[in-house]
Length: 293
Image 1 (tube, one colour):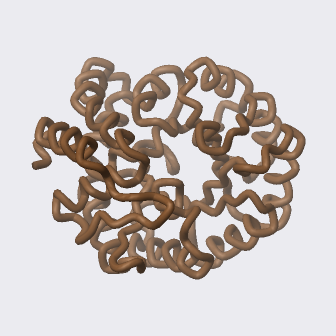
Image 2: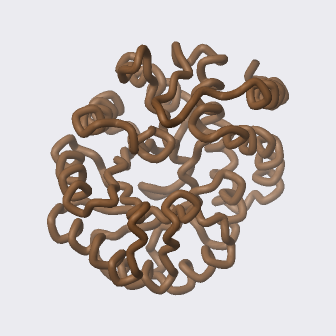
């Protein structure tokens, strides 16, 4: 498997008493690497990047890079809906030694396709680091179209995309339009295995916070052409994938890690709230079915 491929965890950011739990983050990273994960994304959506302040954001990336110490690639989440802020976070990640950045489609302000292109172009012009684009229309409202992705893919530092539209037709279109070495990663766990089957190179995953080993094994099987094994693992994980979103993410993933004893607290930061009783009942059931509890 090449660099920036495979099962890559969108890490939660452990918190205690309203503060980032640095030891919790270090412990979580060690658990991920020991379990065979192929890469890590700090400060993505699952890492609550939207509610980390700039100093916290930069520190989480810096600590992740230091802890990983080159054992797996670190793709740092540095997106923003303000192009100048995205440039600042991207430059900070570069200085911290991140291997690449994950840059999300600007949320809330609903730019045109031309605006999207110029936003990413401005970041690329300002900072010399490989970039993975991130399309997640369910959170950003704006859908970056495959033609815009293909236009950006001609830039030498745009190496791939996390495509979280959940639309396999759109994923096919991106793979068809972009260069052969362009890395298409699923941004939704439930489309991870199918994405690899149609030419994708892996997943940036939420469920792998809890099940890094099994998620990595699923993607390895899919990429090696062992469809039967990949399918078995996909369905073993399928209910737990859904449980990760039975309440607004990342509350279920954080609670699951707390229940497993991998982090001290499942605390999230407002406006996110901790998982409710119905969600906890479902999460606990699906974790037991996976042998995690």
